[in-house]
Each structure stands twice: as C-alpha cells, then as structure tokens.
Length: 136
Image (tube, rainbow, N blue to C red):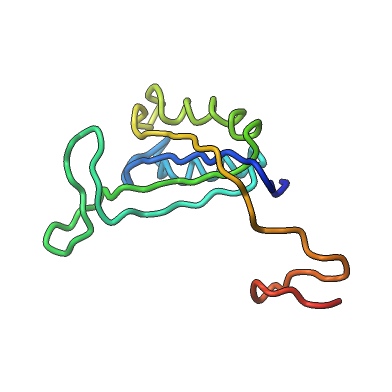
C-alpha cells in the first residue's frame, strides 16, 4: 500500500446498512476488497437520515427507529488504482450474487487533492500516540 499525495480520486459508495453480500454487510465486503486490492484506505460512515431508490426516508430519530440507515464507504487513492477497483465494485453493486442482494447502492467519483499526510521530515517519525512527530 502506498499513500497518495497530490492529485487523487475519491470513490464514495452509498449503500444501506442492511445491504448484504453473501450474508456479510455490503459495506464490510467493499472495505475488505479495497484492502485486499492494496488501496490506500477506506472508511465507513453511518448516516443519521436519508433516502434512496426506494424513496423511503430512513432516520435514526428515536420515534422512528430505522434499522436500515444510509452508509457511505469512502476510498481515496490514485485515479489509476481506484479505477482498477471499479470492476469489483460493479460485481458487488450490480447483478445478484448468491446470498447477496445486488443492484443496491450508488457509487460516485470525485477528483481531489491529498494534502496530508505529508512525509515526515528527515530524522523525524510520527508518534504512535498522536499526530505530532517525535525525534529519533
């Protein structure tokens, strides 16, 4: 895995919290495949309210307890590496797989610029306890 700096591509995948792939959460499958593909990183964010193709509003508000909240998986890496990952994503979001719902979700691509993390200055390394560098 390499950490990109400068120009990059951000892939954001919107799925439902209850969407599955072979009896596993779809968002988890996306993250694990991104990791196996050697992408720089992936994060999952759980939404508090939203709607999608079903036009049903899902919310985390107490009076309307929803168990299918929106989830966003965000992956950032070089454009070449993100685009190479898209066929795997198509498999997950496209046609049904055994035990998987398929046909769920929305994926978007955005050009972005990675400004952090910068490589540490010579003779310095990042502290495992926080963001500040420590001297060797």
